Length: 617
Image 1: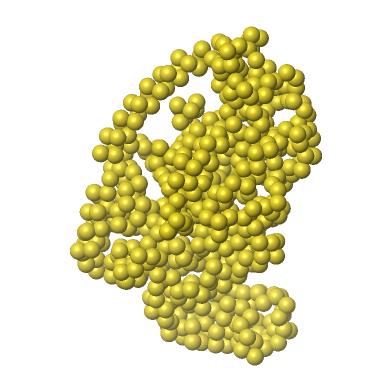
Image 2: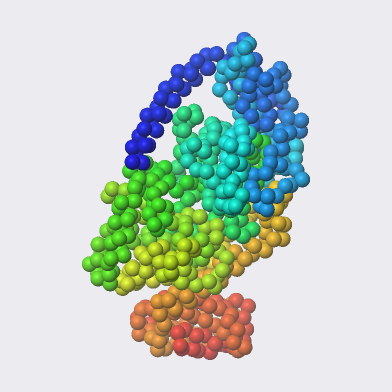
């Protein structure tokens, strides 16, 4: 049914396109407004000259994001960029969330937005609207070399009581103000026409009309809202054409998400952005992301993260899949995001009724789902300690000839509690609604009954703990994210009081750092306990040279009766741990090297249940 509706909408869209095909050439013949200086970020102000290719028409313009009409300001001479051209609408004062969630700053940073069009003598618009936004450092608009997204839309589309997508409005239920309001409305009928500009290094990017919607879950009520932009041919261009993400070769996007800094569960604000860099090297579908600042009708709207949208267009970009072909499921109960849920429901019924300790059944399931993808998905969610999972933030997809795969997305609630045992969340058998329940853990619990799967899971987890999840690997990602954001945090604070102050932000970033530092060990200990991976196979342990010089490599010889993973620990004589790591041992003799820098004295080395004493000089 959904595909039938889509086909009808396509026919409707084609009719609109045909209208545009005839109308736009007529506009081009009658009058077209051009800016001699494109928008972007500049050090100093300059005059902006507008021209029209038909001298019989006049140019009218607005400065507050509104579409020009016959009563708008008449252009007569170059507009010198100055504070006087900044919008005086002060839309930041409009209540766009429940009062308890709303923060009103004393003022906001403003750019200069000029929207212009040509008009005939009867005051009728005879050209498309052209929009250019300017962000001038000398006019107190220093954005610290951030990329910029500038969205302009008519104020009624954003703030009208009945139709505005940014306000509580007509759909607010006073008895449930946290979960109701215009901003919670979804679908095409709640998409509004806007103009989107994206500027990055050298003011490269794109500038075009698009559709605008709100985005996210309960964060829609925040005054720093999640947004989505849609490129459609009826708006002028059917793709956003630019290489937005440095690590993707993709240069055309149908839809993009603007994820707000405030969507993170702590004031670090960077958890989801950080998770992408950890996820991208795994066997996962994950969403590319990059930071930018957002301006709405010329007013500063804080730090956002431009991100791919996990939908059929994402699959089209990454897998060259016909967007009409996939089934995309949005939760474990079979919520349809695209296509239908017949195959998914059939899969889950099969899982519920089958004992996968039977190897034949496991092999059959391996044909239905991408086992390696599912293993990486589970491991990363558990490692990251996602507090808003697994009952929420699950998305999987399938199309003809392909097994089910899982998309990793929305890690706003991650990297908080290093000691929390998320195996409990991942195997919960309760009837709770959230954050976990028996339905959301059924597939994982069923697979754990199979010894082959368990070993695959343990082997993959062991590799990731020692490599991708090691603090030496994750710390640089965090440091890079902090470095990218830190100069702009003060503006985010001034605009939304989230974080409350710079000290709060630094403290929350330190907590993420502590998580990454401690989680590696805690995750392994929890894994060892969950799978009962206790080791008593170490039969001999020696260290050499002994005595050894501090700072030089120390060799450890370990003899093991079996292939296994265990912890190597070094203690001083007070019992304090000075070195710790997991080691993978093969059957027989193993050689390990460590380096105890700036350590002197007597130390105890422990592998499994065996110990040896070493003197460092």
